[in-house]
Image (cartoon, rainbow, N blue to C red):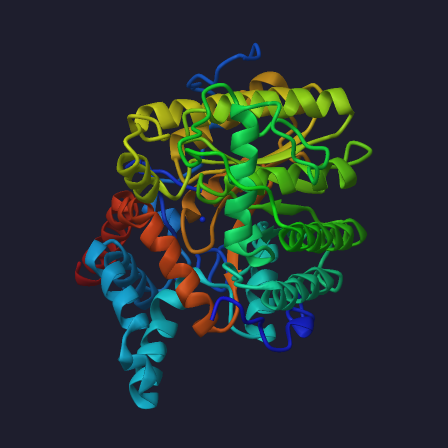
Amino acid sequence: MANRVIPAASKLLKTIRPLNSASTSTISGISPPIGFSEKTPQATTTAITPADNAATNLSNFDDADKLFASVSTSRLLRTALNLHLVGMEPMVDIGMWVMRSRLMQTPLIKEAILGTIRSTIYDHFCAGENPSATGKSVLELNEAGLRGMLVYALEYAGDNDACDRNLQGFLDTVESTKSLPPSSVSFIILKITAICPMNLLQRVSDLLRWQQHDPSFNLPWKRDTFPIFSESSPLYHTLKKPEPLTPEEERDLELVHQRLMKLSQNCVEANVPLSIDAEYTSIQPAIDYLTYSSAIIYNKDDNPIVYGTIQAYLKDAKERLLLATKAADMMGVPMGFKVVRGAYMSSEGKLASSLGYKSPIHDCIEDTHACYNDCASFMLERIANGSDAVVLATHNVESGRLAMAKAHEIGVRKVHQKLEFAQLYGMAESLSFGLKNAGFQVSKYMPFGPIQLVLPYLLRRAEENRGLLNASSLDKQLIREELMRRLKAAIF
């Protein structure tokens, strides 16, 4: 399923056009997202610290009356149900079981299941199945003052044929942006696993880790890149010297480079950046290697096109960010990064434990928050100094406040092409609109495609990052308050 491309992808959107926190400050949205179809008219850095400044406060993010003023009661009730469903951890397990069960092989049952999902969770978190629906979602987003990050929901290609088919889907998506309103699409999102087989990513990562362990280890196929590891980066995934790539594997790796370069070149021509998602630490070295080698070629003239991703829940995140930006400076390459918390906490901890090592993830959520805010502060200062670009992808209200305060403190203009905030489509609407109303550029991470293609993608994201869906207590509270207010108004 993950290796299919969306039918008629070249027509996608032509008619019009996994950021994370376990904090209880997380804010989700409503379905469809409010404000759309029913909306109202070791470097030295200054750490981000809380600031009580009217210019940097989020506006009305906890005022349920104003927030939901234009939303019908029936829609609020449906939203409350959706948030309740996704907040129940067993629902993820049930969803995964249903999608893998024989029930999906029975046409009538399958249609009934997909119909139920389509009218609830899918409509809440996805931009659309077909060109018309997806185009409408992006246009409404643009009219509401937000931008779209197009997430063509493909990953885990098994062979070169699947990789080539997937690449064409991404190329068609880039082409579609040319007919949309200017700047309505902020990024194309790519998971490298969609254009490179997983086993090759694991092989390349093993070899890169061994070279970090033994610098004399020669990798004849290795291109120019930035540092991938820091001194504290975990190397436990590769416990013995790996065999060199076979001639066939080297040819396959070259094909991956060609696919990524073709996609990057098309993004240059369309003037829309390409953000490459981070994934598991077992394959992240290869992902960073491919990202940086492409960035060196295509990031020019103070215009980053290829963005990497820093996962702040990893203990070595800040060190690797410092090393990569320092190397980019020395090579004269403008670099863009998306800063996220991370989405693979459970699997990373289990893998490290099974091998007898400590988890690569921070020991507590407070350390993750501190690392995220520190990375954000570092990148904001680089922007203020005329370097690089950053996407601050977060659902954490406090991180949003602190980043706003920092940008205000150091004079980063609110509407600044090098600074973008981002949240998932259908979630954290209050944060998104609060940031937008304060004058910052804000994007929504928008998965799209036929339900049978996108649903497995969403379920994997939910399985990997259950805490994000379960941490919507404030959302539920605000919706309950508004429903109760309306009930009382109707009665009295």
